[in-house]
Amino acid sequence: ARANPMISMDYSDDGGYTFSSERSRSMGKMGERNRRAIWHKLGQFPRFRVLRFHMSDPVKAVIINLVANIA
Image (cartoon, rainbow, N blue to C red; front, side):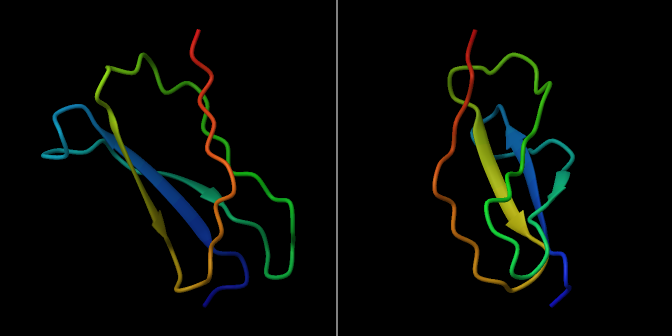
């Protein structure tokens, strides 16, 4: 495993048949706590958008909160 694993997110607007290109963020270095992965400017979200997340390495990831700001 890398010292700085990455998390990638992509999305589908057709029920999971096709997905956008992945957008990656750092999960923080090993032992670093309170790290946030934030994606900005994702455009308008259709009612049934599917989000998919991938980890770059086989590390234990704990997602405590997933928030979307909808204007």
